[in-house]
Image 1 (cartoon, rainbow, N blue to C red):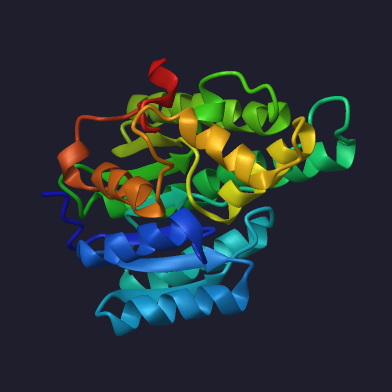
Image 2 (image 1 turned 90 degrees about the vertical axis):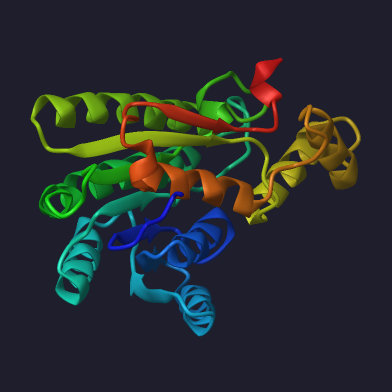
Amino acid sequence: MNRLDGKVALISGAARGIGAATAAAMCEAGAKVFIGDVLHERARETARSISERGGECAYVPLDVTDPAQWQVAIDTVVERHGHLSVLVNNAAVFVGRDIENSTLEDWNRLCAVNLTGVYLGTKLALDALRRGAERQPEGSVIVNLASIAGLVGSQLDPLYSMTKGGVTLFTKSAALEFARKGYRIRVNSVHPGVIETDMGAQTFASRATMGASNDVEDARAAATSMHPIGRLGRPDDIARGIVFLASDDSGFMTGAGLVLDGGLTAQ
């Protein structure tokens, strides 16, 4: 189940966190994986660690806001393995400021990575994914990392929520466009709850600053209590969902959102 044998994947922002866990899980499932990131040394170490455990994983420099770097990364993947069959648009940033205290610089930074990065990855990988689809029974795949913040409103993270809402609807629209054109590229999104990552830690610090207590551990406890399952998410929880969406087992899914939030949005 959920095997990725014969698939070649490019994952943006995969030096750490959910991206790194996804790279490891995809390699374990049989895929050949490229990690794209601006954290060069961290990304090299992640790729090296996965390779030492038997996975076929390599690093390619990738600033998702730069179309030239996207093109080089995609060309590198195709030159090395002959095709690209999975794109995971994972790279994202979090600012953690409310509307009143945010700046245009904050907004532009969020848009550049969280929105422009997804658009550029999708657009520039399109030709390679179309050709890669010819090798796959259920075609090629794009998985976009959205968030529960792209499904429900957020009292504390309105700008981040706005960008992730954009990713959510872009996913649906891209899925419909590619289906209409007969490209055999499925496009789905993943919506994590609060996850134990560096970005998760940023959210605790942000909530502590904006809250009454200014206590990071209180903010962490409050976030945990929002998840009916009784814990925060782990990167592997999300990685397994992404592997499913990348596999042929999800061959009848496109334009869908996979919610992995410990029951938070069920309330």
